[in-house]
Amino acid sequence: MTVTLLAEDGTNGTIRLEGTCSVEDADTLASLIFEDAGRTVDWAACTRMHTAVYQALLRLRPVVRGTCGDTFVDRWLPPPSPEKRGATQT
Image 1 (cartoon, rainbow, N blue to C red):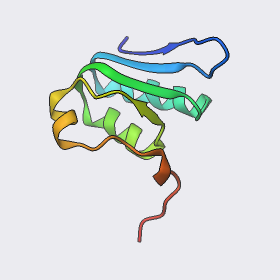
Image 2: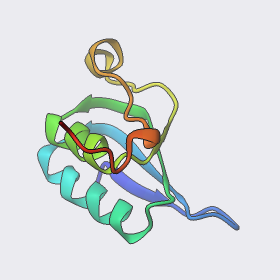
Image 3: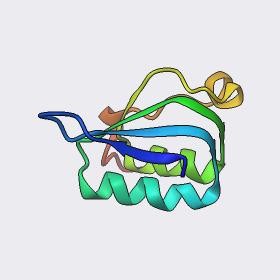
């Protein structure tokens, strides 16, 4: 599994994306964020990210830590910003 929840004492835990994150991982990621919206996502160890995973991050807007390890995502796609959570599109 490339999406894992790391338990941290006194915190909500960190969701870690590692290796190749496939389309199936988008559902796991979304479920972990829905369980606790205060969780941080660490994507530094993700080497390939399916667009469905990025879309889950973009829609749910968790706090994302680090630089994405997928060079395409790092270069061309901005990290999701929690400030835009709940923003409506006109």
